[in-house]
Image (cartoon, rainbow, N blue to C red; front, side, top):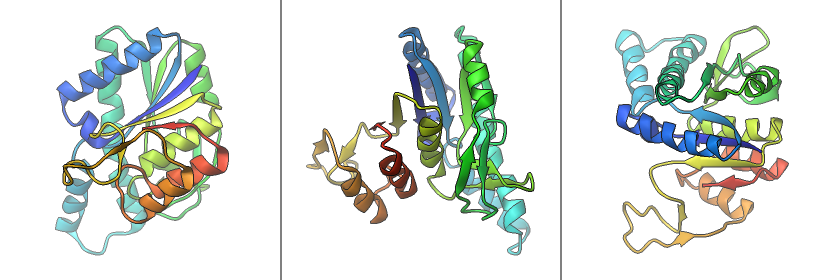
Length: 227
């Protein structure tokens, strides 16, 4: 089985949390699964990078901003691979380009055109866990692009489809989908299942648990999502 797991920024925010993720990945791999992990930038890294850019100028090209923002996910992927190696799990990190994620040239809000996951399959065949930088791809000019806020969810779903994965698991700082944000609404109820259309409506209205473009892709390609 191929399992795609996506971990958000809060899940990889520091070394302790990286170790928690690594142990989850190790457990999944020990169940004889091939594991592909998609990571977001650590904590508030993306916001900090935007602040740094704006401290220099308010007139920065979208292309250069994409190059800058993509480094957040690259940090996460390499740090997670180092953590996995530390606990004896063979792993390799891949940028969006190395993973074969090709997009249009809509910088800061690109859309995935196609995925050619040959390198991922090769690394899985070697016995590696593959850790992919979420939120990014490359256009036909070879320029780095980013997929917009929440784009790592989209990366994970798109990869799950391209790899014909058995399941796509999205991990965040809440343990599932609720009727409201459980950190704010104390009597929010956890939902065991939810239809794609209902989740799409929630995401479109601002629910942060899943990116709406990721839900659209999951519905289109019938990707099994576990939150």
